[in-house]
Every structure is written in structure tokens, then in C-alpha cells.
Image 1 (cartoon, rainbow, N blue to C red):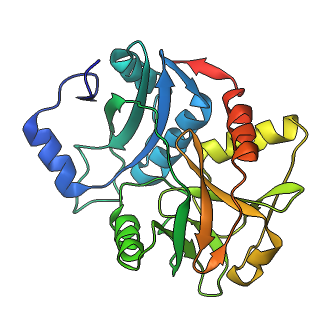
Image 2 (cartoon, rainbow, N blue to C red):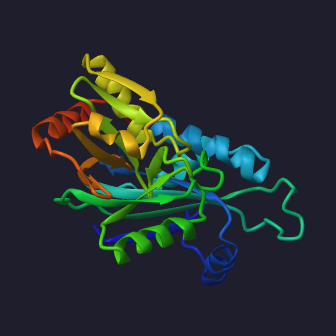
Length: 265
């Protein structure tokens, strides 16, 4: 399969259309791994798109349109897929006006990756409209750049009071020896996190959500990142606080996530 493809409303996009969308940069998206035309948590991804379209564009998204566009892009094997909901009809001078939306789907080949544990730097920041996976990624990559310049691998967002929220483009989970603990700080509730949480509970592993502050990290044995269908990597440290890395337990979580049912597009 080719390394990457892109279609707009089920056809090849025009250069002018892509330029217009790039300059506007208003919309939202979801991303996931698709294996032989099947997606884990597809219903959650579609519902995310429907809800965000209603909020950002004031119109209803037909999920069957999204499925049609996905079927056109499906191939044998594994792909990373991004579905962006945008609108060529959106008017800068009348942003409150409901408009019809366009579906931009891009794919690239999914390759196996070995991802080493992350050293993350805490930064005071909460994403604007954190409940929507929107296209405004400047703040995310600027935070990542700041963390890299400081000698870390990635950024972890916190409130001014030091309550942990989420990573730059990922959720975070903690293990206290008995349960997986999710931070309650403002964040985008990822589909992978929702699927893993459900799978852990079915497997008899306790999970809970609570406020976690930078000053209370010593009560956790280890931490891990997760996003877009991937569990891990481990978090080796947050600022100067070091964690153990339990690769065997993380692999058990990966296995639990893989056992969650897939849905055909």
C-alpha cells in the first residue's frame, strides 16, 4: 500500500480547497488505527465527530457519510487514519451561521514502533475547549517544543494549582499497586482511555478517577501514556520525580485493550 493518501468527501481534493482549509484551520477530528477495514471503538469515534460537529458548526453529521469515506480508503493491512470535519462553506464574518460540513480523510501505513519510556516536563496549561479534539494544535506543539528545549521528551499539562490534566497529545494513567488511576483535571477524554478502562474493569482490574497533584506522585509506582489506539509508552519521570517501569504489566494492559471488540466500517 502507498504510504499516505488523502480524500475530501470521497474524492481527490483540489489544491485550492486544501489551501482554503489550511488557512482557516477551523474544525475537529478523530484518529485511530484501522486493520483490514475494522476499527476498535468505531462507535465512540463516530459519536465524538457527531457531537463536535453540532457544537462547532451547528449542524448534524451523518455518520454513514463518514463510513462511506472510510470504506473508500480501506485497504488490506493496517493504517493510521485521521478523519477531520471541516467546512468550505464556513464564513469568517458569520461564524455563528450553521453550515454544511466536509469530511477530510487521510491515511498512512501503520508500522510497528518500539517507543522508549518518556521523560516529561510539567507545564501550566489547559487546552481551550478541552472536551473537543479540535484542529488548534499550536499550543500543543509549542508546549512539546518547550519541553524538548528543556531536555525532556514531552509536556504534561497541569492547572496553576499543580493538578495533572493530560499530555500534549495523550492521556496519562497511574498505577498505585492496586488500581489504575486517571487524573480528573481538565482533559480530552480519549477513546483509547475509555476502551482500556472498560476492558480493565471486565478483567477485574480496579480503576478510578481522582485529582492528582504533582506533589503527590510518590504514592504511585509507575505511569503510562496512551492515545489513538496505542497503550504506552511508560513514563520514566515527571520533572524530577522518577517512576519504575513495569513492562510486563503494561503489556498486560496492551493485551486487554486488544481484546476489546472491533467494528467493521
